[in-house]
Image 1 (cartoon, rainbow, N blue to C red):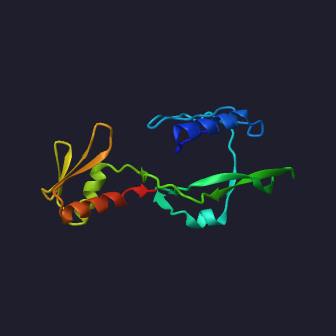
Image 2 (cartoon, rainbow, N blue to C red):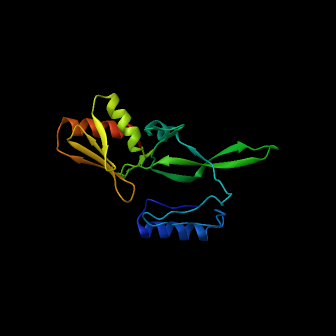
Length: 177
């Protein structure tokens, strides 16, 4: 189990609850810090939950390559379960995910990190002159697009129509959830 997007106290409390709960059957619980990576590929336990209709209809999906992704804020309702037939006729209980009543705002997540060369092609197709100069993509001699040391794309330049058009074309290359 990987617990993210909570305060340190609430994440720690949830992790302790899950460790102490005999019904959960969770052997490993990870509570990574901001920017910390967790390798959870070796874990073999996958728990299935059913999404309430209200949660699915409220989700705003974004396309990322072959997948569609959405940000959801929900709680697991262990009281409401659906019985599902497994192979061999035995029944399995599936917990329900319910939408949160008070959804906290979240920071948008940008998925599909585009290459600057791909951005250059998109800009040229949209009538913007774009040339590389020392690893920086210079657009209409007004806006510079570069990748910093951490790999994040930075957009710099004068605030003008070109700046906003380039930013819009760049954002269109991401799936933003």
